[in-house]
Image (cartoon, rainbow, N blue to C red; front, side, top):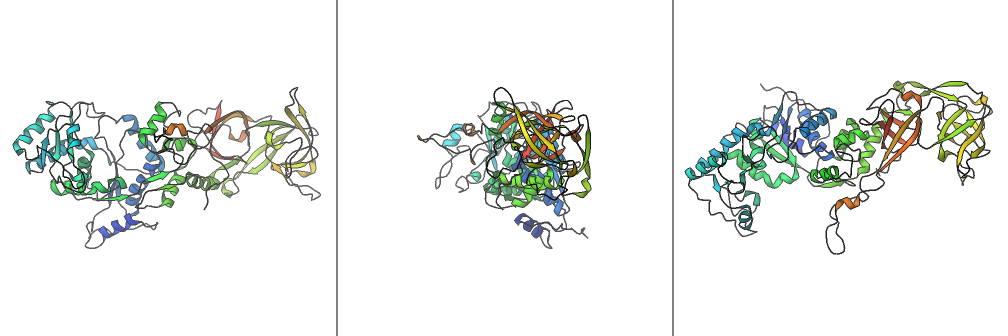
Amino acid sequence: MAEEVIINESPKNFIHAFVEEDLAPGGRCEGMQVHTRFPPEPNGYLHIGHCKALCIDFGTAEKYGGICNLRMDDTNPAKEDTEYVDAIQEDIHWLGFDWDDRFFYGSDYFPETYEYAVELIKKGLAYVCQLTPEEFKANRGDVGKPAVSPWRDRPIEESLDLFERMKNGEFPEGSHTLRAKIDLASGNFNMRDPVIYRIRYVEHHRQGTKWCVYPMYDFAHPIQDALEGITHSLCSLEYEDHRPLYNWVIENVSVPSTPRQIEFARLGINYTVMSKRKLRRLVEENYVSGWDDPRMPTLCGLRRRGYTPASIKNFCERIGVAKNDSTVEYAFLEHCLREDLNATANRVMGVIDPLKLIITNYPEGQTEEFSVENNPEDESAGNRIVTFSRELWIEREDFMEEPVKKYFRLFPGNEVRLKGTYIVKCTGCKKDEDGNIIEVYAEYDPESRGGNAADGRKIKGTIHFVNASDALDCEVRLYENLFSVPDPEGHVDEDGNEIDFVNFINPDSLKILTGCKIESSVKGVTAPAHYQFMRHGYFCIDNVDSTEDHLVFNRSVSLKDSFKK
């Protein structure tokens, strides 16, 4: 008797409905274990769009007690690199998914894939074609007009001989291809005798120069799925028109299993680009500092910016799985991060534009300690010690010599509460020879320890501060959207010419602030520590540039939520 499948109670989508249909009594996969795969091409770093796919692949297997393979789609020798292979594995592990010992390379199946191509030739279902790329395009036909190939009826033995000679490197690139013999008049152009093998004299990152003929993805992919025993091949909507070819390959070669391809809509997010080619251009032309630049939609970039695995997986789950392409607001991704960090990030006081505040009636040389809660949303986070002395750092915007209407922070004669410590009353300020304010003066109320007035008077303003005697210097990086428009692609000028997407890069996407101050409680903490800087947003320690002697904090997301629920 087959082992009972326990279905985790999580939101169901149309993919799950198909899977359950296959698992049901009499279904295609009755008594089988659900087996999916995530097949990234190692020609770049994973981005948030890939994350949706891998959450679907790994998540579906997890939901039905199945397994998921990780397979590098390295059938194109011109683009792959081991740097990307390592980065992909790191990103997937960071998200919390694993593949145990089920890690494969598509190129490992080159021998079997070649033999299946030979099998098709022997069955009269494939032939060697000698149309050049230009001739192939010219003879592809049109709607209502069949394609043409003068080599379609080439004798089987002749195609077998030519295909082997292609493998042996006897012909130049582009001179010969192997095409599946399906239907030159098909309304689906993917079925018009598609090329399934081509000649490429390029060194492969794993196979070296062993091969000079390489299978096309549409031919290799179903074979790889079948050889690994994949039950459900989940892929993006762009492959929907390729499914008939996927099924044709499975039906016409002697593979050991019959996977089912199911397509879902890709993830689009505004204010960014998802094309690997365009992301690579941003890196190579130095518009960003690298693939892990915190403004990039790559997983390593999001990780460096301070995004958490929980926030990204929650985002992917909440946007759902659909059959129609759509664009999700970047603000919703930020909303998911803000929700997670609000519950998990400790609070600290950081001053990013420091101005000296001197408490003139506080004893010189004296320091007090105050116990302050780390996270009001999480009692288990406990408390930390905040120090207080005569000289403090406050935000420059928290003082105005001549206040505007409804300004409740420091100005001469006004009282404010210094977070968790005392009430102080502003008495004046000092300016330099250029008229810039360089110091603010105030007196504290010794009876207000903890921030409450003994006589019950109401204090409207509360500001944060950092003790100057033990404050840590730090660099703060403020990030905004990389692009200034929601959709940086597809714009045209007055003459109808496409506008280069890099023209829409936001010049204010990164602001670097130096000389910032942060409380001493963060001393010695390393990445990926996350904090809420009071009134400024959520920050993390930069995992590349930050050191013990030079702290660097990246703003992950502001406190203000712009997403409209």
